[in-house]
Length: 286
Image 1 (spheres, rainbow, N blue to C red):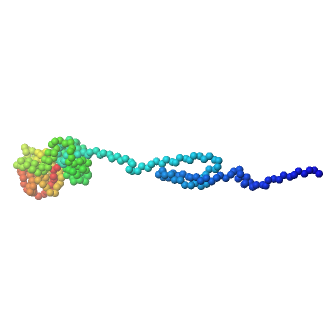
Image 2 (cartoon, rainbow, N blue to C red):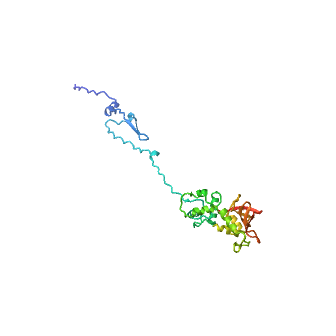
Image 3 (cartoon, rainbow, N blue to C red):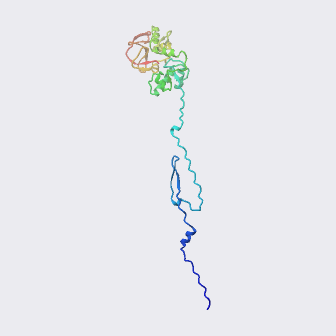
């Protein structure tokens, strides 16, 4: 008989999963924190799940730095810059037909006439057109309301000639004693068609033009042109012009109390007499 070798016994079989467990042990559960940047620079933290923990033996990378949030500027932190406004041009006072000086040049530049410093008929007409465009009272006088519409300061110090104030004051009486005194002085001169002087005689508009010229006010030559150059008024005062017909064929100087100075017709002298019928209106100069 041949000898019999003792048999070898295998170790009990283990499941494959058990081997895998020894080779790859489960990673311990590590609880960390997740970081989130909140609006306004506040940092909020909350627990993270087990799945966010690194496995054992794996080097963990350093956490990323928290984002930098720029501070929010409030309105109080923003400086406010208030620009300084330039001073407005100014005129010294009311300007009208016959006024002179630097203040007149200021308004002439605004209304587009030659800035010669003399408030003549062209400037007077240009001011009227300006007032009509702006919806103002159309009287050809630059007072507080017209000055404001022009962007001018009124009644404050301005460059002006020394005689401007006295001239402006004297123009206030242009429609009264000054004109009436001249008209009275030149009564008794016989009518002459086309006449414009005491030596040749006067027609109606030649007489009114001459009288107003003596007080420094230029009027157009004909009766209807003078009507257009004045401001129509419903309540006449001494020194206003009185017109007859439309277009006007005759003009006189209202003297008050229903009287007027005029050069009426051939055979009559310049005189003071009652205002006769047929009046078409009254006009104020300046």
